[in-house]
Image (cartoon, rainbow, N blue to C red):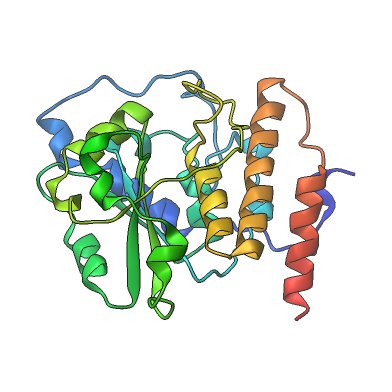
Length: 265
């Protein structure tokens, strides 16, 4: 059955608030001081959906499924990452609408981000591997750290860029040095194939989001995001193999059924 046969599902026709925020991140005034070549990677000339940034023929907007969770995500995004349509933090922002994104700056942290850090509503955690000895005093376990803090919402801070960029963001941001570091220990292997990872254990941003939601007990949100990530992968696979249509997959059907069930409540 073709995916476009589900006329009862409302298809988002405009970019999400998160997508619009990502575009603001991409407009970095410091680029004029440090000019780079225009983005001309493979696929840069493809006509894309203005909302989901997929090749237009393989638009996945109708599968965008908002869901609520106790945990929230704050994304510190490298400016270069904001220009990439294959960025998967977008999937988190489109699924969990409270997700916030901020452009990373080495010396000038975004004031709105600092304000969130100071809010008693949230308990922030900086997501990063615990593979170096010099910050072991900051490494925490989520369940232990949450004891006595259950009324506060866990806020997961994601450093969004390549692994090299993320490590630089971690090391070169003194305004993050006071935050507890939460490593993600997962046996999950990455299914992200649009960029070459250093190893199968290096999950993309959306996959990290899924695992963190599970860790926080937000299992329904984790399942929605996981299925949306699968749809994203399937859309790009169809585009890569130049299939004439985007056929309905199990993941797509799951999201359609979830939307209908949610609408009937």
